[in-house]
Image 1 (cartoon, rainbow, N blue to C red):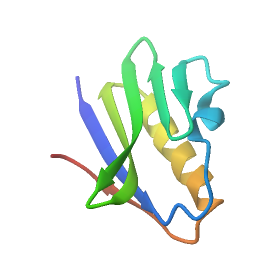
Image 2: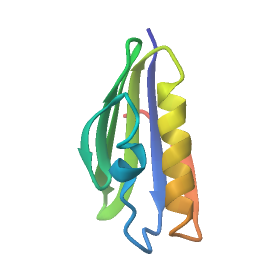
Image 3: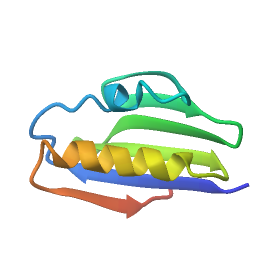
Image 4: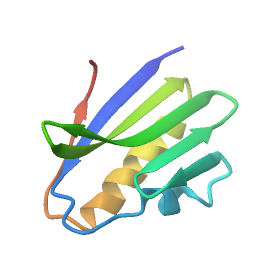
Amino acid sequence: MSNRDVRIDSYFSLPTDLAAELGCWPEFVCGHEYEADLRSDDEVVVMRLEQDDGRPFVRIRGTGNGPLFHRVVGTAIHALSAHSDDVWLTRWSD
């Protein structure tokens, strides 16, 4: 089983409802705005809005093997880039 973790930084120029972007997926469990929980047979993915020295970022963590984590990351980047002129992703670990 793999643990995957990314950090997405942006200027958050305009609000982006990432949970709404994911809400119609069969894997969607619950969520609101920048936070969502998703589950498939093979994976659990958790997306949260976190702070680092007062700067917000979206953190997406996935446990398991399968495409769900990558689908969530791609969708989040695509949605955030529609509302900001600068979005960047970092493979993350504490």
